[in-house]
Image (tube, rainbow, N blue to C red; front, side, top):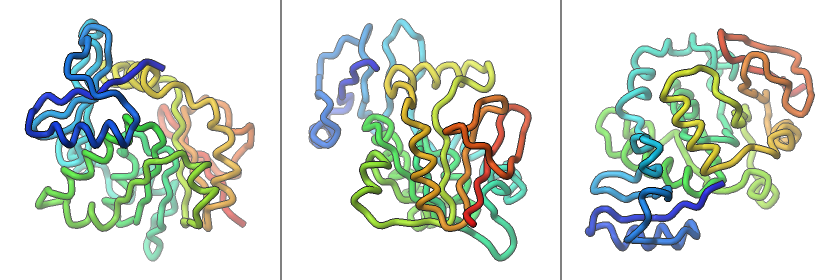
Length: 253
């Protein structure tokens, strides 16, 4: 993993940058080396992660009310989506979801848009800061703000450590551990390089499955590349396959 520093690009948010540095343990540096350093940057309107200039990447931020998330909300297919079927959404059943590997929150947002109460957990402080900022801006949106504030919750912590000290359960526990890119688009390549640089590999992903099985009331759902090995080498009783990914489903009996 590479080092990440906090940079405040808007003087009116300097106090917020200082608080973020305290919360995350990252260094606040107003004179970073933009050629070599990843910067968690506070702009006037959002928090974004800026990669070193030579990589040529546009800033990465979380936005639920625009771009890909907004398009998927409007045209994604509702409860007919594969993720919805995998999580057991159907007439008379809108399960609560515990997402132990939230990342940028895209799947959690889709499930919340379909009526689910979703608790997201993200252990990496950089990704958690982006996600928290995206949630803040989403709650201020007139269209999606009311239900986002009611259905989406973020816990910035390591799932094993947090669950060891807290009582929590959910109908469905959702896992999407990081894996190699599923398609060769420039956007996916950019995000995967950033995640590998900043977050590192999910070397402990196998340990999450037994934890999830002990927490879920209805099922555990694991999102995987279509030809990837099973998490913890445990074959699921049920699978739903798409073109490039599959959902491994472990019912709680």
